[in-house]
Image (cartoon, rainbow, N blue to C red; front, side):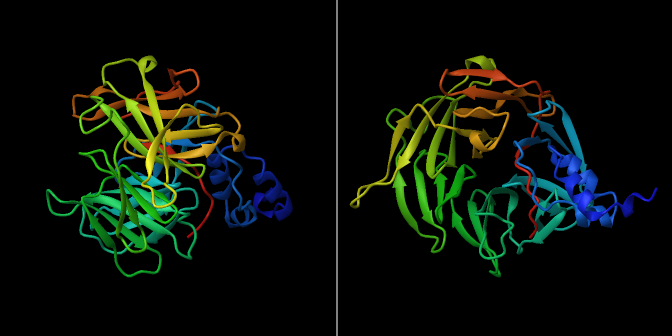
Length: 345
């Protein structure tokens, strides 16, 4: 039987029944007819955890929160690339033989080239509002320019070069045309206008927090349901997962020329936070089956391996009960939470 001769209507119907994006990718890879007939709308996906691939590896491995199993997908465009980071379901990749940077969608295998940037160890801080749009999305990278200088670099689709801000930080987020940067020393939040690259405000940390207090704490800045959250993880590399806890503050923008300030919150409603090593994102539990709202999925640092790599366990924290639990996955040495998308550039 010639499977490529199946009616397009039947193929399209079949493609809408897949619950895993990896199954849909395998379906689309059968032949051109199946690819053309497949749905262009990916069924709602719970975030996966993408394991850090080796340079030039075309097989990417994901952990599924739904099945608690590992899934693999083949991404031909990775054959000469190193995966550096990811954001919004898109990978920041660099050519193995030159400094060329690109954004790559591992689901569709589509890629867009980024302008040249003189930067070392680039990290993809965010891409927004959706890097699949061609009418004005913005990309932000962080890295070393000339030591000890560190910078944040912005590129808006259609521009010929990057704009930069000195003394940047990877602990930042995009919110309403603003780039919010957490100072790694003072723990102040610097608010920059993305369009003008000018500093609008500086927000000090909440009372009781500062450059060295609380000791060992990790701070994340996350845009969530129309708000900006400051999420503090009380981290001790040697404490077990069940002793982890978080403090959360919401940024209140002052009215009548009042300065923005932090307000402590004990509940984030149906929102679910996914925290990577330095940044994160938020989803609504009402849109995803299998995740509970008012919770945090995070990477719990466990120690240093013999080759100086950090080791992490994947875990979940219930904000309401204050209870953290380890997820049923092996320890990882890198990677990030990933929200699949079928959009093209």
